Length: 557
Image (cartoon, rainbow, N blue to C red):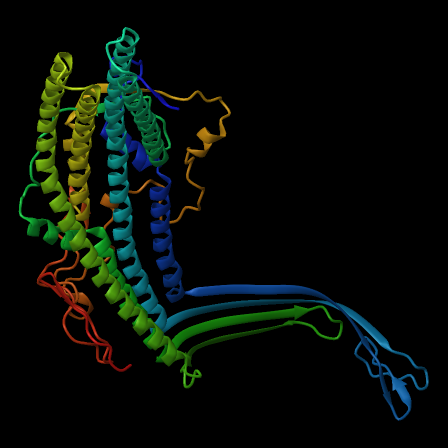
């Protein structure tokens, strides 16, 4: 069991604050590293597809040693051709001629796609996937930030609750000792001793549970950062108030414009729309230019010199009938587009519900913190009054024990409410797409600098658990002009292409400037969004604007 020492003990290592631990998580979290690598992979996929539109040059050649035997017969006679190329016959001799020679051939071919609509639209789809991956990476980073905040303050929450349970156990333990002494001199009955013992056992069980909760919270933080912390800074007095601005609709509007999960689903619609265009391009012809050169030579004794030829031309291919696979592919991608539209609507509704719920919880937390702080004062006064009544005989031991338990429950509940307020406030900012380093620095300023110290379990140098928590160096990868081995941040990413009003009346003003260092910049214009109606093929489209979505009905294909 993890032992927790009092905060008055000084350790040589400086206590880690929230910003320090957040930095460790951003540098060493395995899930975030995976998301960054996935983003790089999606970028590389665009280059893979785009490479098919660039010149393709292939060379081939072979060198061969040949052994040849010729045997012919005519009119009952077997003839053999001499190797020197002359005409010779062996009548009735049954003779064959054998020849051996070397040959060499070389081939060089170059092609250039002149028109390939399917590949061009696959490149466009890959661009849309990069746009979507930008938001997915940002969502992963923001989720990591809120996970670190939650784990950090869960440790402090568990620590304060544990301190309350320890104080409760000590107080009830003293009450049990007093009851036992009074029973021994005959002042009270054995029932009061047993009541005190029962309360003490309950307090002891609650203290053990609190210790376990502290260790679990500590391990959760270690999982996120891959590091152990001997001490962290505690939370001091902080301002308790409604989120600013205090209008709930403001936070909902921010979430619809900036929440990376909403933006990722919105970008997913464009990915699916591009998939439909790729499928439709399967009906279009392809045109390419080609040039080739062949060279052949051999040392056969009756031939001299070499053969060479070259070609330059244009080739075209027109799909006349593909067994219905092209039409089926169009239908499949159209249904995928429809599914992505509904996924976006589901995410939008879920985000609105989460923001509203978190705003309500933060508002309630403001009142709850004040009420539970006042409850400590009230229960302490009640305990003092009960103890005075017990001394004069108007109250019994059960009343005193209940009053003590109520006091320490109030202290633990007050600690719970403070940390609920902090976590819910930052969760509201996360759902609204506003959780950034500046928000964490503000919360970090609420820390007192007073250390909460931990005595960690001793580990050997070869502890496999320690090595498992180390994410290690990134895998080696080949360098290329389109990729980098540096560590990325979502603040550095901006979708590769932002066309205002593009995609058939799509985003009015595009996504904006992507992600800036201060959080998300201006997002999707509420006057833009997807326009009402369908494509020429009758595909229903959602309408996004002014916070509403109208999902169109699928038409014919």
